[in-house]
Image (cartoon, rainbow, N blue to C red; front, side):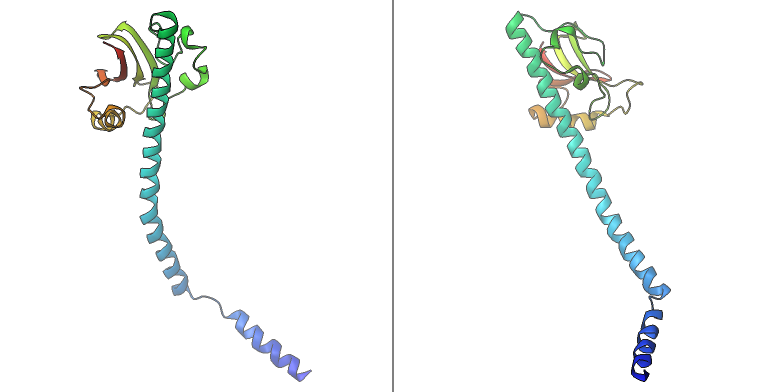
Length: 168
């Protein structure tokens, strides 16, 4: 019995000994520093993902417009921002075109308007924030055609509109 009480006594004393407040604060500070280092890396990665998704969607929509032109001899009609033109329903799922783009703004098609013959792109407007600045859109343009939004086939055609110009 005596042996057993000695064993319990030793383990009871060890169990009462926990971490001190200073030890816990040190661990919390270290975790905070690690979180501060890692969090911006994830933010940059998700922004790159949004840009890449936008470019891939835009390529898909431009290809659909070109396929429509090959089949019919003309480009799809001028659509309202955020609404899929009827002609493209056989090539693009409506819910993919009518939702906000990965970078904000609404998908849109242009036909014989805004200084171009045919184009597909993004229209930033108050109803679909955020609005992206020219520097941000230049990064996207460089991904698409290696130029800025003043040249190449991805360009700024109005203050709040950036489009893949299918035909000038």
